[in-house]
Length: 457
Figure 1 (cartoon, one colour):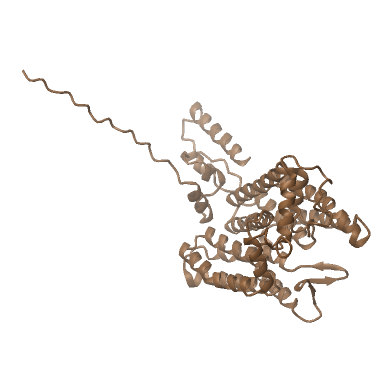
Figure 2 (cartoon, one colour):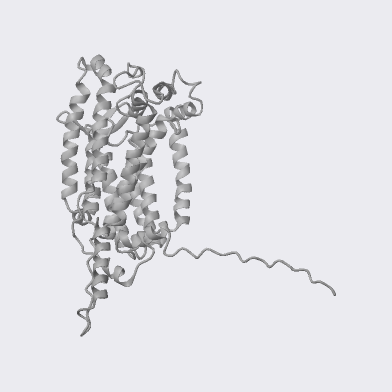
């Protein structure tokens, strides 16, 4: 008798079932295209028929103030006041014989910024869409008038300000919001043709390029880069083909190269970025002193007011390098806290965009979130030596008038978008004759109402 050897059967590998519902970017894209009515519909992949009916939006229904977003903005404003005074007192006493020179002005700017935040929160975003074209034309005119002799004020070789009654106004700061409003309006109107190059992609790109060009010739390469970045992000969110964006980026590369290499002082900054230690006595002086500030702070910092680099060592300590002062006096803990607050603002801004009541508000919130986050990221990269030195202020923290008030107004607009999110409407279930006392049907309605209230919160 021959014995048959038993062969091991191949074990069947259990395959995981496919994930129900779209992915994160799919849910974002669905919201942008108008296919997903609310945040609840995007964050939950499984929905019953009754729950789907419960998410029908009610336009204009208030949702309440986003306390996390508001708290993040107010925290940065308060911390900014403290750090502006701490980093500018010695410089103000030396230059103006008044150590309160900058903090007194910053208090005025913050007060005006809080008023602007309230106005932006209370004003309905429908007005921005209605007056998008006049706002854009007014901004273009203001940027062009800077170069009219006798109107613009030249400071350190740059013409960026109007000086009216002793107050400096920088048109490039409100130009960021104006460009976002225009792009949000035109992309929402051309939602069906945004993937077409000549109809949906080229017109907004040309307008944004012309506006960025007016800022670039001031010269202000940092603000022009922010305007270009927010334009590409908004076009990407609107559904523009990725190939168009890549071609645009490659086409702008020679312009950026010429703007950097073709300008002697920008070329020196680039060389100092590549070798900050070797240029620490000339073009790399600022970044070298920034490294000393960050390194001397350690984990817990030297304490508020105990920093040494503000003693006329680190230039622009209260504006372009205020984060270095945070690192020196509050340490690594303070730096992480600031980064987390900006991360909170970014997350709540995306949440406001995904739950906006219409497509225009969605693009508007995405654009504002991108501007605040991108500018904060550029400032951090400059302080850490990750990009060449550039005059980029830290939103809501650095000393400044036009920038601070404009950013506060943008935060108010984002609060308005978040507060006007659609509230799901409870479904009206038709009851058949003779089933009015059905206990299960009543319980089903109660469950839907509970999930609706949870989604509205």
